[in-house]
Image (cartoon, rainbow, N blue to C red; front, side, top):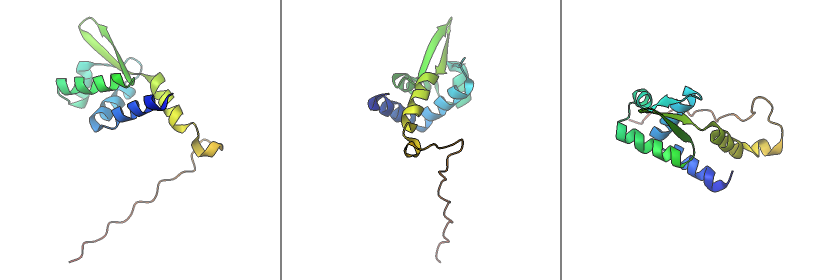
Length: 116
């Protein structure tokens, strides 16, 4: 994958509503969802959903097909997997990561009490 293609995909997913739409489509599986079902699942207005779907389409993350009066949208799993492979191709400095990564998130800091 070219870096510019990865950047386009990451920019599209950097918006909270687009990420939400994309995650719903990924969870829907290979069949995808109709635009109406996607709208019901996300709660976005029609025009807003269309805007976000167009951005995801341009980034290559989503494709659709027309079936009569319905438009079915689905995640492009090949593109998603290519993006994940690109992001992780040099994971762990070329060492075998094993089934579970040894990387661990930093512990959450305790909140400080406000001074009176």
